[in-house]
Image (cartoon, rainbow, N blue to C red; front, side, top):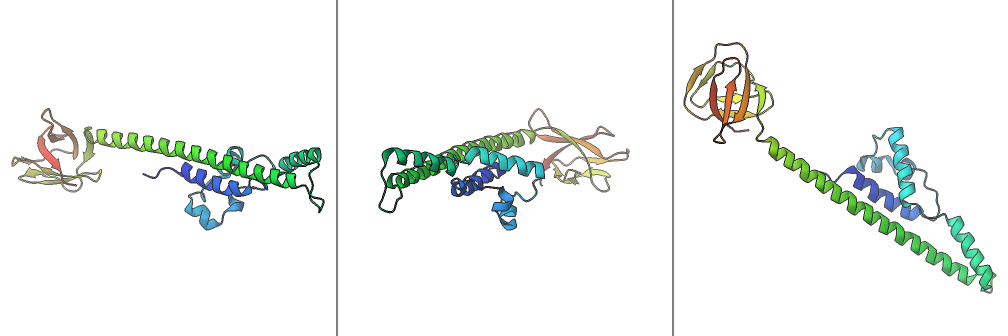
Length: 211
């Protein structure tokens, strides 16, 4: 099973927004990605409401404080220190801005890593639960119809069922089916062996699955 489209969103969102965090110009994945990228990520069939939710979620999760705020704070610190270069720019301001940008990118990467790890863990748990459910369902009794003409069994008769499964007679008994209806019930007996009962006649035969 795939680890989930949520992981794709997280990785793509983190990668896109880490490069846009300073500019604060993220308008949405449809503007940031090509049609081919959207299709490859499985995002091309989102409804407008789903697209709006995803874009908003990415902004909330990964967008760092605006560059305007960072610059304004840096400018205030520079004015207080009075540390300027010969060209009139503040050396301290430049260093502070670079540190702020590095800190923002580090924080974005940290948060992306946490979200991806959580999504992977959740997907693995869901996959394990689904696999356990599939294994458990293999022993559950079920009903289906025999496909095609059905006149009974003799020897090693093969039964193709409407659910796509194929079963074979397990013993050499004979039965001529003359009742109406080809619905059968397949289940395990007390010995753990599979049996097939024709519901219209009540006749039962031992079977095993071959496909």
